[in-house]
Image 1 (cartoon, rainbow, N blue to C red):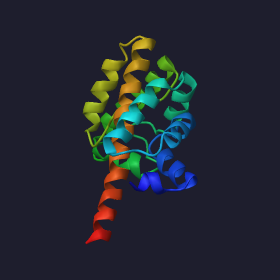
Image 2 (cartoon, rainbow, N blue to C red):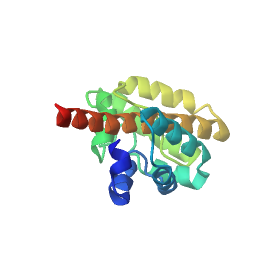
Image 3 (cartoon, one colour):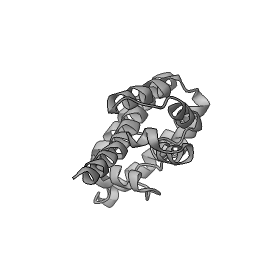
Image 4 (cartoon, rainbow, N blue to C red):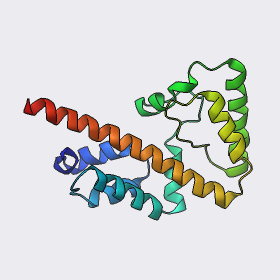
Length: 167
């Protein structure tokens, strides 16, 4: 597995593209070598469950607001369903993001994965009814989904590259 073969700096960069928490990245790095893809995903979930609230906030800071112009390829791909939304839906999403941030003190994080803006808006509106502790649990679960998707994308690219070499 290429992730095991990367030097620490390469692996750190690859993992940081999946999650912006330094603690998560460093713990994933120290857990190498991984036996297979499920082992990577299991470690990612376990480490995410164990990081501190401050580490979680650092991870959240690495995510753009839903509906804002994404600043990296992963976020752009994940928010692709928002791109063609009606201006009225985007305006409501922008207002909802601001309300959410005032209420919870951090960016609204959701596993967007190509979902349309109106669906993400409905999820945001539902989550506004959560208390702070419930919302932290929900956003950890959403971050786990995002991390897994990004890891799978990274590892599938790795598998594809390995297959191309062997042919």
